[in-house]
Structure formats: structure tokens, C-alpha cells
Image (cartoon, rainbow, N blue to C red; front, side):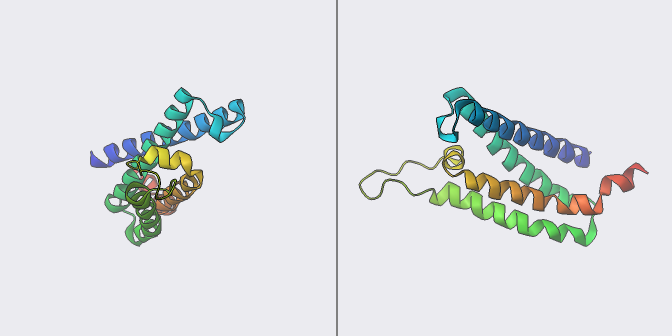
Length: 145
């Protein structure tokens, strides 16, 4: 039962991540630039990206622990470590702002991801690395037979 819930949650998060990336890519093409995306589409895309990355990292991390993949689960550790470091940095340190003259706002993960799109690439790569044990060991192929 737990395996099915984790798989469903992970797949739902990966679908949300895909829709968020697709929304931002289409909006970037339509509006001509990443920074010119209008309000509802940018919020929708970035919200889906943040939910998709967070949920899929959590789901893939749990799946690497509960699935029967043996030592292959160690392949997930670098992705999890990178993701935790990037999320921690964005949540607690934040991105540099206007300097000492300006009041620093409370960090918002979605705004930080929007302001530094390279962090999205790093986190998507961390998701892919975290999924390696499940792709290499393929536990679903053994349970289906």
C-alpha cells in the first residue's frame, strides 16, 4: 500500500513539474522573455515547478528507501544532498538584493526560483540523479512478474 501511495505521489509531482516547465517555456515564447511573463501564467508555472520539484524529491527519496533496490539506493544520495543544499540556501540565505540600503524581504522559494532560473536546472538535475536507483534497479519489473 505504501509503495503505491509513494509511486502515485511521485508521479503526480513529476507531472506537476512537467506542466510547470511547459507553462513557463510556452509563456516565455509568447511574451518574448522570461522576465516579461504576465502574472497568472508566471505564478501558475512557478508554483507547479516548486511543488513538482519538492514533491518529486521527497517521493523519490522515500522510494529509494522503501523499494527493494539494494545498494543502488546509494546513487540517490548525491541528488538528495544537492537538492537539500540548494533548497536550504534559497530558503534561509536567499538571493542577494539591493545591499545595505534596502530592507531584505522574507525569502520566498517561488520568487527565488523565478529570480534565479539556473537553480531550477540544478534542482531538476538533482531530481534526475535521485531517480537513478529506481531506473537502474527497476523494482516494478520484478514485482510485476
